[in-house]
Image: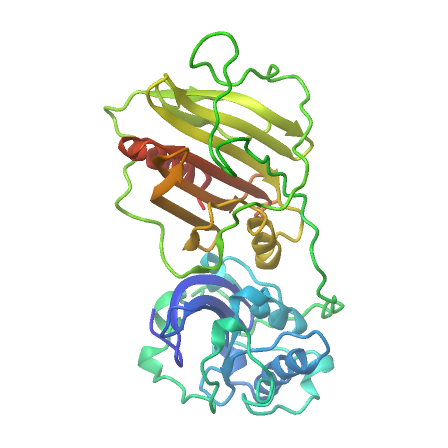
Length: 412
C-alpha cells in the first residue's frame, strides 16, 4: 500500500459507503489509524465539508477525539488519529452516519466515483470546515504524535493512492445509480474509564507470570485441579506486578518461529471447558484447570519432569462489547509481562518475549501474548486469549510452536 502524507499503511481496518480506514505508522514507527474519504464522497463537496467538519467537531468537543494530522484539501481527504486514544476513525465515520465493515466487502459497500450518493447528515454538514491545524495547535499532543503537526500535506498522486491498490474494484453488476441512506448518527458517548475484570493470579515465589508447578503426590505432576465439569472460582482482580511497557511498538508477528510439522507428535485437547477451541501441545504436556467462571477459563499447561520446566498460563476471557481498541488496550494493560516492551504482532495481538529473564537465579525464556478473536456467533471480535509461559532456553521452540498453532487456529 502506498503512503499518504507522512504515514505508511500496514493493514486495512474497514470500509464504509463513503471511505476506508487503515492502520498506519509514521516515520518513527508510531501507530495511528487513518480515515480516508473515498469513492463518490471524495468528489462530492458536501461530503468533503462534512468530513472535515465532523473531524474538527470531534477534536474541539469536551473530551473529544483530537487528530494529529490531516489534509482535507487532498483529492481524497484524510485524517489520522493516535492509536492509544481509541478508535478515532470509527467514531468519525459513525458521526457521519456510517459503520465500518470488513475490507473484503469493499466492492459491495464503497460507493464508487460513478455512483450516486445521498447528502451527508445535517448534524455535521452545516458546520464550517477548517484547516487541519486548528484542533491541535496550542494543545499538547499525545505521546504517539509529539512530532510537530504542520500544515496539511499535499495530496498524493492518483497513481500512488493507497485505495487504488488495496481495495477491490467496484462491483461490475451493481447499479451505478445506487444510493445510500446514512443511519442517524449515534449519540456521542463520553469516554469513560473501562473497569476490566482482569483476573490475574499473583504467582508465588517465582514472581508474576512465572509458571509454577505444584506437586500433588506424584513427582512432576501438574497442580491438581477439579474435573472439567466442576466450577472453579475466578482469580481476584489485582493490579499486575510487572505489566508490559506501553504502547506496543509497531511490528509484525515473527515469521521465523517454528510451527508444528507432520513429523511432530502432539497431544490434542478437544474439550477443555471454557476455551471454545481445540488445543494442541507437544507430547508430554499436561493441562490442568486453574480457574473457571462465567466468561472466564484458565489452565496451567506444560511439563515438569524435575529437570526441564516448560509451560505456564493459558487464559480465555470474554471481551465485553464493544470490544474496541480502547477496551482491548485496557485489558492488555492489566496483564503481567515481566516488564517487557509490548510489540504489535497484528491488529488483534501484542506480544513480548525475552530469553534473558532471571527467575530464581536461572536464565529462562518468557513469552507472553494477548490476542483477541471471534469466538462467538455474532461475527464480532469478542474473546481475549492470554498466553504467558516460560521455559529453559533450549525449550523456546516448544512455546513458539504452541503460539503459532493458536494464532493459526484462532486467526488473530
